[in-house]
Image (cartoon, rainbow, N blue to C red; front, side):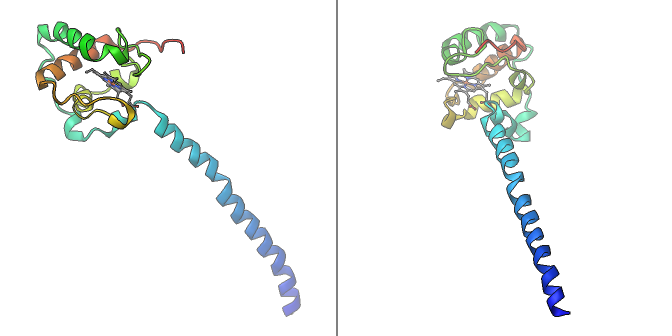
Length: 150
Ligand code: HEC
């Protein structure tokens, strides 16, 4: 009785071990891939803006001079990395990507204020707040553009 039991148990245990191993090993590459995709997204930082920042209204949104002023500031401070038309440059990604264009003005203001320093996006907190909002007004008006050929 005991012998038979042990004899049937061994293959069962082996099979269980194989299944357990397969379960631990197989999902790993999938998990790794999704984590890498998340980290690799240039625009991942936008999703990190706190709700309070996201809902902040742009006080310069209806200021007719904000667009022109924002365009000048963009040329001065941002074009170097993000390109003349914000379509992306050698150092910075396109700001006409859906991720940026669909972000709220408050989110963009938050990005400007905090930067993504470890990834090469400078902090613009020294730029007076109205100027940061002017840049946001300008960038939002550019709209979504197709990705330039890479
Ligand atoms: C020195 C180069 C440089 C300059 C100047 C610069 N940026 Fe960036 N910017 C970057 C880089 C690099 C990234 C990508 C950061 C990342 O990987 O998250 C970025 C990202 C962004 C993003 C997307 C946020 C995200 O999730 O990464 C926005 C919006 C942005 N920049 C706006 C601006 C604006 C507006 C200006 C001008 C005030 C500006 N940047 C100036 C390099 C620059």
